[in-house]
Length: 125
Image 1 (cartoon, rainbow, N blue to C red):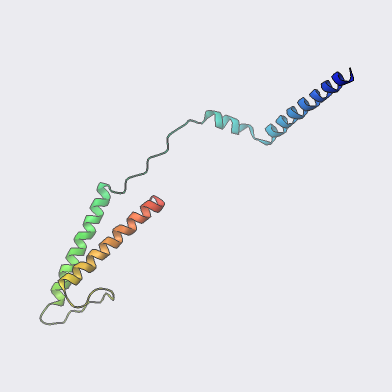
Image 2: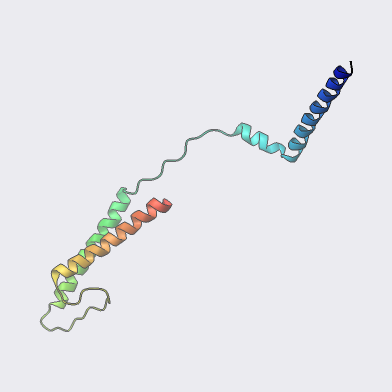
């Protein structure tokens, strides 16, 4: 008989502890969280935008065109017979060579494109 009474008392004790814990945890948690969780809709994650779009192609095409025109005018002016034109860019080739100027402009274009691609991959800009 004592065992049955002890079992009943322990059962009530454990039920009281469980109910008390539930009341404590629900009183700490605001009620609006349950409502917010219940009303939340499941949506798929947004798809990341493509890096190569018509807009980026237009921008890189414009950059390449401007660099080609800059290279052409630089070579033309540096090879002028009067020798009165000088390159002021400290990293640009100074000799007036077509190959050196083309390599410089191609390297600059590749650096711009590569930097834009890295920013897009790393940060999703």
